[in-house]
Amino acid sequence: MEDFERIKKFIETVLDKPTFDKWISPLSFIASVNKIVLIGSTDIKKLSWIKQNLLNKINDNTKKEFGLTLKLVSFNDDDDDFLLDDTDVTKTRTKSSFDSNLQEKYTFESFVQLDQNRMAYSFAHSVSEFPAKSYNPLYIYSDVGLGKTHLMVAIGNRILENNKTLRVLYLTTNDLMKEYVEYTRHNKVSAFTEKYTSVDILLIDDIQYITRWGGTREQFYYIFNKLIQMEKQIVICSDKHPDNIPDLEHRIKSRFEWGGLVDILHYDLEGRIAILKKKIDERRKFFNNDFQIPEEVIYFLASSIKDNIRKLEGALNRLIGFANLKFSDTKNNIITLPFAKEALKPFISLSKKPSTQKGIQEFIAQKYNLKFSDLISKSNKHDIAFPRQIAMYICKKVTKIPLHEIGNNFGGKHHSTVLHSIKKIEKEIENDYEFAKEINSLVELFK
Ligand code: ADP
Ligand code: MG
Image (cartoon, rainbow, N blue to C red):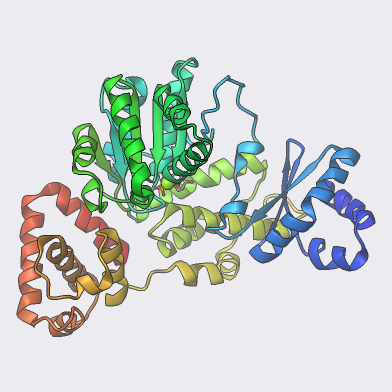
């Protein structure tokens, strides 16, 4: 805290008064670690403006004067530019000649094993111990915010721990695409291919965007095949099953399915609580802080935000940020339930998914790569009819809407059609354990 007060006074002398009063004065101190002072706000526009217009000037001066750097952090989630990212605050990785792009905090130790991710964890762990010898490629898929990237990066970190000489590379599909465009612009496609076929472990995130690539996809297929041929490990993450990525070349699809194909399901309340507790411990250590979050507050958080652990963490960050603001000079602070409810009011009403039929339909359409209009169309093609049956089943399970109305909202289907669909899914659930788990996880999400 002192740091920030000192710095604030100093900044006041660097900027003119109106600028200081308008932009810097309202910011809140969060923590100060390793010469970095974390400063937060809920106002993302304000943070962006400061970042663009003032931050460099301020940091030039504070570095000279105190050896300190200010870092801006948003208390909201989804503000990628300002997410609380501790990589630059914790110790820096021992330098190796090859930049792997791995976030240090994502490790197997910091990942909570639960029924919903047990298989994914076990496959990932096995790949990290026996690269290219167990599942290759390993393909992990799930809805967003359930820990795919975390697991994938954990594989990379563990492999490097075991063997520093291996060339591990993590990047997103979009990064890869941008880089490809850059290389082609300079007529250096062969250098691009060379770079990516010379890695030992390739970790590619968010492969669903590959369909945006157009012609450049070929290049990826080439690299992919070459690496597999040379027995190099590939790990792929996606928010979709390969079958649900449109326009993916059949050959590559079946390759994805060859190695290890695992999913992560939505966590139940107990699971979300376990993860949240782990995150609270991490933050307590990181901030060197004594705040206490009672069980009832943990329960409130975990039962309010169901669909996405990243959002849950965003809420936690916001709560801790607010608590730091409020209790800036006392120790052993308890974050009470009324305080949490107040602090998270806008956050929670926004993230709570109302279980309306429309909400369910939109979610299922997105998940199975359909348009909303497909879902309510007359088409009986399996790719459309099956997700539609799932959506009907979930509507029946989690809402009180009568069958004929469910049917109406699916483009005027008769209630007997709805009933038939529900029976069909029930039967499938009885016969297929994996399918049952997936559907139950969706029901849990919307309940
Ligand atoms: P995805 O790639 O599936 O969208 P991420 O891996 O980015 O999700 O996870 C989002 C956040 O949730 C990360 O901060 C991650 O650490 C956390 N998270 C998700 N699942 C777990 C888990 N089982 N244990 C610990 N943290 C988790
Ligand atoms: Mg991810």
